[in-house]
Image (cartoon, rainbow, N blue to C red; front, side):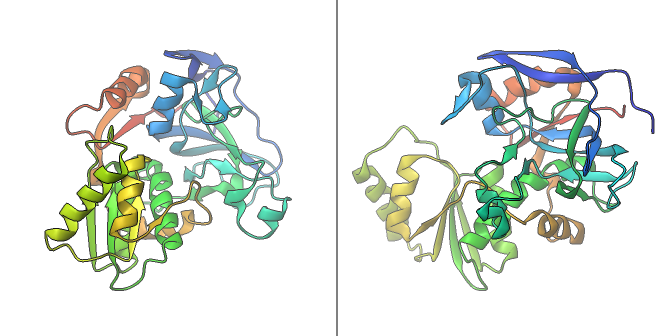
Length: 312
């Protein structure tokens, strides 16, 4: 498959300034493939880098391509890659570990201190025409799974990892703070794991940080006949939600996913989880800035916004 002449990329230049620019088309190294990115979901972290230029100690010190929830079509493979071929439709797991540290050797590569994660400084993201990626972190999509669904496998994997970390099992009662994409997918993963009852609470009053407020709100929930839960997931990052979780029961949380993509693809393929309903808005790549504004403004009725790119 011949590659196009342009690698148009959506680049964060500095805080509150994003623009398109043409970057070199990458060449695959050993164990790598080139993917024509076709669908990318907008994550809250992308918007946060745009508006703040940093997340914690990850600081944008130079222009950075945004995006990490992506899928696409393989257009070039290195000579030593046998698991994929040109034309394969794949979902990309955005974090590639070093493979040699103690954490990687223990099988918990999500804890690798040298993880190269897309759109996390200093690494560029996937909102471009052509993206170079490790072949073994690209996962083939079944024919009946769309590319836009494939882009949502990344947040679904976060939900699966959280459910596993929480030890959700058959018959458990689960409470989820946060009705955004990650919260909804965590709830879906918990349900798929066997939870008998999953309650989702949207967080509207996140400006409250008083422990008394958290206790009062938790008491309102429990006094209304709500039964205690075994696992509480916080998918907001709001302090008051963590405090409320203590009163409801327990909280389980983790930052990165590990070894969950195969499970996510299988759940999607089998129909156990439906991602189509989460995609409420779609934008062409040329309107990526408008898509980011949409997410930033939190427009009514928005769950997940996906940027679609044409075949190159």
